[in-house]
Image (cartoon, rainbow, N blue to C red; front, side, top):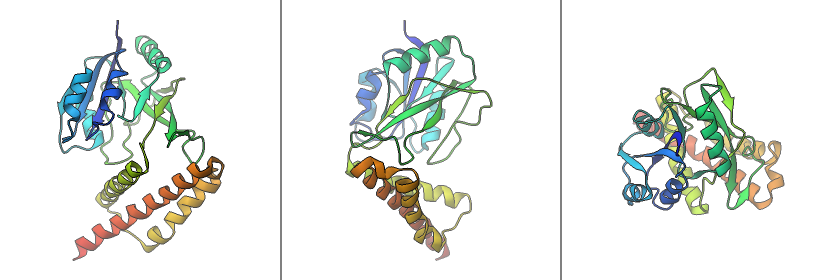
Length: 250
């Protein structure tokens, strides 16, 4: 009998991995894919793999998740991304927890992989997110770094989630550009304007913090590349913000 859990997945052009993402969730009562307007066949592939798909173009990732949560058929929901995988051990823990919950929501730890290597440093090691909760909860609307609304009674799951955010360097660079644009828009919406120190100081500080303070140096070439691109991401975010400021001033 399937576990009394609905898994919701926001997607946008995830044809390369959506079938695998859905098929490994056969243990769940329901898999809901909230698609933001894919043009690469993601929706059809998700349905073929066994998911129920809702079409919600133009929404943020948080908005996509919230739209799916609103239609969930079970009391407990797990918010998954297409680049994450729930192990058999975690699935069993989710089933037990949904049947006898001790908290209103649960955080899950993530094992983050970068170009085939499990990263334990560079800020990628101790990584927790609240992803398992009752269906009356919603995510805070932001374009990036969206999180579940605060829940006072939050527990922690024992088993980790497997996460591979970038398939290769090209994919990493594309996501850096996209997320930098979204992050700049979020900052602009909050009234933030770019300062010269944001562009000149923040990027090198990011590299210093992740490579030395957070011991990315011990991750070899993987750490050097990851920390270097983290600083590029910060540089792009604030130059995008400067661009938005410049446009509004013209």
